[in-house]
Length: 138
Image (cartoon, rainbow, N blue to C red; front, side, top):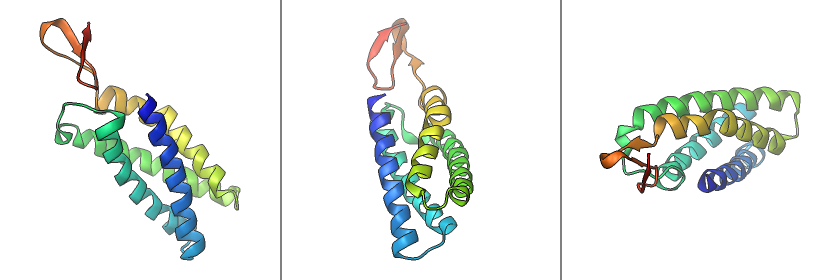
């Protein structure tokens, strides 16, 4: 849970700063600037979640299709919400992006990652293997 929170905080920081860079500095429109931001941050968070947030002994390809479905849905929801809210609350990009990131992470992404993409699973001897790979009594 700790690493999920740290990853979320870094995601918000990276998203707000990359959006500002693409939108204000390079002059890209809101839609393009945020699309580029999401592409970069999503790629970095995939690596973060696989190696730290939901560390597992499963090879990444075993959960890749689930990761793609989850990320696709979360990215689409994130993008639509941010672009819609930026048009309503123009000039408050940081707050809008942070709010949407927290909303999607808490109400959608955490449950999907924890229970579907990298779930805990039973192993030999009636012990459950956690995402970290250590056993605990079932």
